Every structure is written in C-alpha cells, then in structure tokens.
Amino acid sequence: MAALLRRCGHKLAQGFAAPTPRFTASAGPARVVLQESSGVLETALLSNVRACQHELLYTFKSPLVGTRNRHSLQYSMTEHLCAVPSEGDSAFTDASSVKSSGEGIWVFMNHAFHTEATVYLRPVEHRHIDPTVGCVAVYAAKDLLPGEPLTFDYTLNEWEMSTPFKCLSTGRNVQGFKYLTEEEQQRAMPHAWPHVRQMFDEHRGLSPSVTGPRIAGAGSCSWLRGAEARAGRTEQGARAGAQTLCQLIKTSVRQTANRHCCAGPYS
Image (cartoon, rainbow, N blue to C red):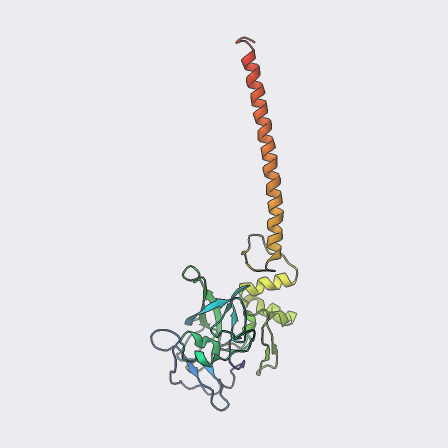
C-alpha cells in the first residue's frame, strides 16, 4: 500500500518540530516534506505548514495501472495509483527510488484509521487531460502543525490489500475495507471512496442502478451486463411490436385508398 513500512506514524507525533524541507510535493514553498528514518523514527511524509481542518495541503498525480502492489493505492474498481512499479509478479516493492521525486513521495504517507488520521484524500478529475493518470487532493482532517505526520485510512481506498499489516497504534489488522467488522464498516462507510462502497454493495449481492458507471474488465459489474442484456431483449421486443403496428397501419391505409379509387364521387 501507500507507506514503506506500513506504520501509523504515532512515534512521529511526539514533540513536533518544524522539519528542514527535504523534498517538496508541489511547486513553490514546500507544504509537505519527507522525513528520513532515523532511530525509532520512520520514513514519513510530514506537514511543513500550519493548516486548518479541511484545508487543501497539496495534490499529487500518479500513473494508473491494473495491478496492485505494496505501494499502490486503489483509485477505482479496476485501477490503482502506482508510483513504484512491481518487478515481475511480486507485490513487494522498494520505494527508495521515489524519495527524490516530488510526485512520488505520497507513498510515504502512513496509515491511521479515519478516527485518528490527520488527512483525508479526494479524487480530482484528470481523465480529460490524461486518462492514464490519476490525481488526488490531500486535505487536513484536523488542524495541523508543522512537523506533524500525514496519515490517512488505507481501508477507505482499499477493498482488499495485497500486503496486509498490523496497525501498531491500535493492534488492528489492516487488510482492506472488506475485512473490517460490520460495525467498523458502518462507521467508515460515509468516508469511503465510491469504488469501495460499490464493491461493498456487490459483495453483499446488491445491484446498483443500471445508470451506474460502466466499468471495464473481466468479472466487473456483472449486474450491469445482465441488466443491459435484459434491456436489449426488451428493446428488441418493442421494435418488433412497432414494426408490426406500422405494417398494419400501412395495410389499412392502402385498403382505404383502394375503396375510394374504385367508388364514384357520390358513393
């Protein structure tokens, strides 16, 4: 998933100090900075500014791929943000190479469940510019101080993670939204991304409206394909009925015209 060591970042939360900017994730003054691991401190992405709750911290872009790995982040039903490509079929990846990348350092945001997370993520429409790239906005989930670690809830994006881990803060397993308890799912549902909510519905056998998004890929949205097939059969029947009605009307018109042609003007 998104963090190199899959931690909750609470060790970083003790005694915030404004860090020396190392890498910036956007143009201009660095709003977020990368802190390298040192002793008990882990590699993590930190806020470099004071931010109010719901304030936009920064945005990042990343290629969209069809396969997941340790550092990917689920973006839709079939796509994952991936700044660290996998080698072969392995889900385990080394993110060291993106430490010098302004765009790629988002993978060092660590996990915390949504009640404790310091930031939340929202998709930004970018497909009209480049359909192969996903764009995400990072907002403060609470008032932030410089040096505070940026943590978000992986399970709000991930339905089923390729490399689960244990949250050091809570002791809970982090495997994806699918593996939360029913109570945890209900609490997190309002914050989950649309694809997670849709996969939750499908997992429970619920069928979204046939006006829902069309998702490509084998095995995806079987309810939609079934509905389209039923709609197709209904449409074919309607066309056949309309053709029969038109034929009857044409026949009636011809018969009426023939009677008038054969009869005199006073008949």
